Image 1 (cartoon, rainbow, N blue to C red):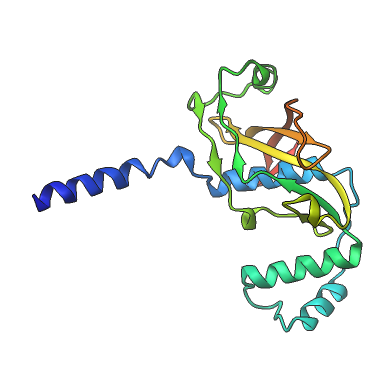
Image 2 (image 1 turned 30 degrees about the vertical axis):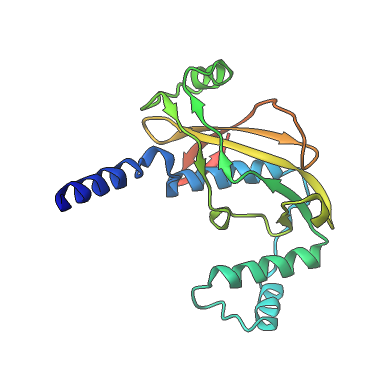
Length: 199
């Protein structure tokens, strides 16, 4: 009887480990480039080294060692406060994509993208793995708004070419935090010197 329970436990464990529902490091890299393109029209500025050192000193953070997630958040928050900040909301779930979706068809053909599989199930994303431009802040509720709201974003699964040198990211962007726009837009990506860049 004990063996049956062990076998059942292992089966359930294996069923719950569907790798297609997990977001890989490569997919986060592509998503980060897509997100920077989606947000690009708004005040993107860069922090000067002296300013970054000043902020780190204020929070007792050593820039020469590995930062914790909390320390990174403190630095991002300080930078956003100094900039006045742009705000956006983002869904914590990548929407599912089927290779047969006609809305993707044009871009798959124009970029000659060959997919390894046909179905890309929805997946949860870890927001701390997203690289947020320094003068932006993610908000979750209307009440949290303090800066200029630039939109509510929902990202789709990344469709990678078999060569892993081309990709497409579909997304939906609304002007309000609870908008109902369902117009799908796209960011086309290519790999250049090991980094994803927008076409």
